[in-house]
Amino acid sequence: MNTVAKIRKMAKEKIKSIVLPEYDDKRVIEAARIIEAEGIARVTLFTPEMMDKADKERYINEYYGMYKGKDIDIDASRKLFEDTLYYTAMATNEGKFDGLVAGASHTSSDVIRACMRCMGIDERITIISSCFIMEVPNCPYGDNGTFIFADCGVIPDPNARQLSRIAFSAAELAQKVLNLTPRVAFLSYSTKGSAKIRSAAKITEALAMLKGLAPGVLADGELQLDSAIVPEVAHIKYPNSPLGGKANVLIFPNLEAGNIGYKLTQRMSGARAIGPLLLGVNKPASDLSRGCIADDVVDCAAVTAIRAQ
Image 1 (tube, rainbow, N blue to C red):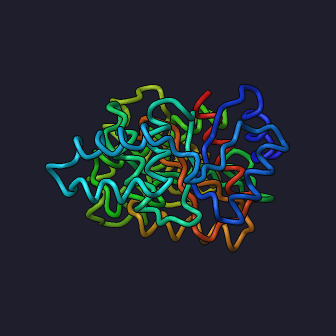
Image 2: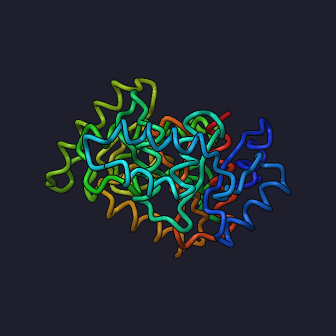
Image 3: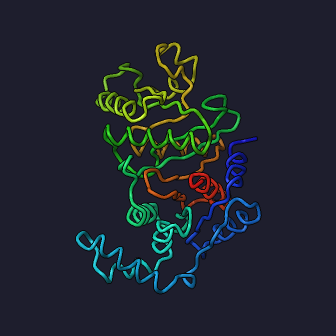
């Protein structure tokens, strides 16, 4: 059974409620039909008519109360809640839904901002980032071609502390959603000082911080990609690595590398890319690429449902 099939099967084991606020997008409409037909989740294709007037007014005032000292006035708050995205994010935070999936017709910044402000940030992690589950066909590396790539969608140039939190939350997702033992590699264009790079110290610090957060997680860095995932290369370039060239959670040094890396893998190898899955939000939520297809929405909904179990 491939990774996508396993994810959909796991979602069915304990049904959760998933809300899709992009009610007028044809891909999302088709995804809702598939989710319901396959019994992946209790799915709600949320339309403006479903908004409860009393709840809406309460959400507007709560949101304004939280952010009025920053960049919002009451009129701006009211305008935000004309959008089903903000309403459903608040409703998910209240427990009316178990998870939210959006991004087919909203930008990533819109989805991330709504989730961050309406649901809040996990105090253990303190930042929001994202990851993709990558399923690469005919690939012997990772876990039979299955990887986690992070961060590919949120933090442009993470510092050491942020890198450690990205790695921690990505490893946690690998365990919970894929039932994998995470093997984390902090990637670079250098392997343990083979090139003199400024980011080496940052990665060394991030690795130490990750070990403080999760002492039992197997991790190493800085590593070139081939040293991280190809055992034969790892044996030559860095035989003392605890990963032994078997990394399955790949932590990119910045957003440029992460975004290019996942899209290159997806387009050139025919890989399935599930995500971006938001990490560090208090409630399970997934962003979508605006170039997604209906199956991408279904798979993100399945992962979000598992995270809510």
